[in-house]
Amino acid sequence: MKRAMTAVTMMCALALCVVAAQTPPSFAGKWTLVPDPTGAGGGRGMGGLGQSATIVQDANTLTITRTTQMGEFTSTYKLDGSESRNVLNMGGNSVDQLSTAKWDGGKLRINTKMDFQGTAVETNLVLSLDPSGNLLTESTRPDFQGGGAPITTKMTYKKG
Image (cartoon, rainbow, N blue to C red):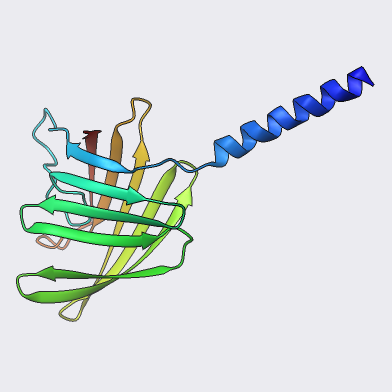
């Protein structure tokens, strides 16, 4: 009987560890870009978080308010993988953005599609936390100027 109780207790503890390991991270907070000592990046890429961002997250949605050189932009994403619609207002033009956000382990992958005056554009943004609690972003967007391969920018943000 004692052996059976010990086995049940161990199984419950293991189940709790598995559930805790599956809990997605929280990206909530105010984040500031950590300057790249090499001078690369800079927070300008489309799909990035800019110089700073505030993220609000609950079980169903993630809302990012970005502060960039072009102003402040807010986007809300559904975390269940269904499509989210946001409107990007730039220079008097409105662009509809359709995004899907999906968890991939501890990473959140956000794929966004939009149309710029007849040109289809797709961007990807991956959010994750490093062991120190810094927010890591990896954004991939088309090469708008050179027409070459997509451009990927990696940035690190510190909380506070």
